[in-house]
Amino acid sequence: MKKIVLLGPPGSGKGTQAELLSVKENFIHLATGDLLRNEISNKTELGKKVKSYIEKGLLVPDGMIVDFILDYIRKNDLYKKNVVFDGFPRRNFQAEKLEEELSKNGSGIDKAILIDVDENTIIERLSTRLICSGCKKIYPGNYEDDECFVCHNKLIKRTDDNIDVIKNRIKVYKEETTELLDFYEKKGKLVRIDGNDKPERIFEKIKEVVL
Ligand code: ADP
Ligand code: ZN
Image (cartoon, rainbow, N blue to C red):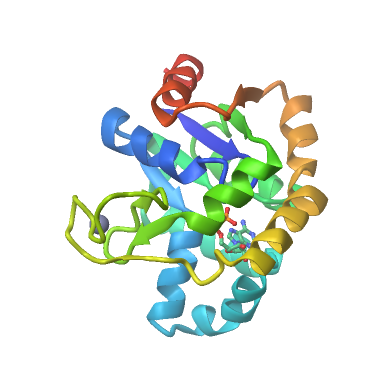
């Protein structure tokens, strides 16, 4: 069973590619941001704590996110399943804890795939994109309809997809998350993919690495 981490700046297409792996290749898509936004809508204790970080585009403290995700892995018994991690880990500490947890019941991460995209492209994508309020599917800003073709819920803008927060998320990615590239490179697990391409083409490249 495979464990894949997708890396890349916000808007690089991690969510889209993880979804393709889940629909077409039987992977479980662990979408960290979606899980956190669910906690916020359900007004859970964790949701109340993480809300202000997410609104500002800051990372949620490591302790909080690590406890939450490791707990999710245990509860859903993800050890013996194909999993694509999207949005976790975002710092070396998180990556170490993830390796530790997965190694208890199998092996660690198989591959970390960096989807590399130009900064101008991601700002343009994030500031225009829409998401389904039901199933969270991501749509480009110029999509011709105002509802999701899968579940027919309304397409909405994510509240942190506004230009100030986007700039902050990119800054946080550069300052905090790029340390993961070294982390996985040293383990011989890092693969870089050019993300300035159509989603289907990127997916083909990811499959070559994963399958
Ligand atoms: P994006 O990758 O587009 O920034 P996500 O939906 O993956 O968006 O995450 C949204 C927000 O959730 C982040 O800006 C951050 O505040 C929080 N978050 C998600 N994953 C993590 C993580 N692994 N560590 C800390 N904070 C996180
Ligand atoms: Zn939908």
